[in-house]
Length: 355
Image (tube, rainbow, N blue to C red):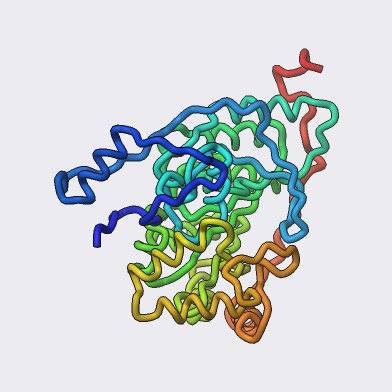
C-alpha cells in the first residue's frame, strides 16, 4: 500500500463539476512514484494567491450561530479526512481529495476587504466567525499572517470575533487576543477530536498535537479568554468512546464549555473518509461505516437542517446523552460576558475622512 504520510486524504477524487481533466508533468511524476520508479518524490503544498471582491459571508444555516463568517484561506493543509469543507474546493476547480490539502488559495487582500466592509454605513456590528470553512490558523498562516492582520482590523474597529481552530499557532497572537478580551470582543473554540495521538496523527495529520492543544486551552483560560472545546466531529466506533475522557481532560486544562457535532460525510467526503478508515483501521472499518449510517437514516450523507449536526436514531441519542452527562460531571460553566457590539468605531483615528 502506497500511503502518503503527513496527509489525510489518500486519494484524489474527481471534481464532479469538471467533464474533462488533464494530466500535468507533476501528475506523471506522481504516477512514476506510485509505481516504484521514484521513491523520494513527495508532493509539496502549493500556495496560490486569489483576489476575492468580498470577504464576509452571510450565515444562513439555522444550525449555526452568528451572522457572518470569513475565511482567509481556501483549502486546508491540516488534512482532516472528515472535513465538510473539502467539497467547496471543487467550486474552485480542484478536488475534494488530495488537492484540498495540497493546493491552498491565499486571500492576501482579506484584511483590506474587511476594513472596506466596516467603513460602509450599512455595516451593523456583529460577531464574525473565523473561520466558517477552513482553519484560519492552518500552517499557511505562519507564513502569510493574514489572520493576524484580520484581528488587527477587528480590534481597530472594535468588532467582535469568534475563533475556532485546531492549531496552537493562535498563541502567537495572544497580545491581540488579550486586548480584545479586555473589550469583550473575542471568544475562542479549540477543537479536540481525540486524545489518542495515533488517531489524531492520521485523522488530522497537520493539526497541533493533543498536548499542544491542551496547553493552548490552558494558556487561554489562564488569561480569562473565553475558551470552549468542540468535540468535533464525533466518529461512531472510532472516537465516540472518548467523550467522557475528553470532557474531563479539557476541563482540567481550563475549558468551561464543550459542544459537539456528529460526523457526516457529504459529497466526495464519504469516499475519502472510508478509504482512509479501511487503510488505517481495517479491523473496525465496517463497524464505523454502519454506525455512521445508523445515525443518518442509513446513509453516510445527511444535509437536512436541524438533524445533520446531531444525527438521529439510538446511537445518536446515546451520544447526546453522553455529552450532556459529561457537561454535568466535569464542566463548571462560568458566565462569560457577551460579545460587545456597542463600542464599534465607525471612524477609527485616521479614518474620519472616509465618512
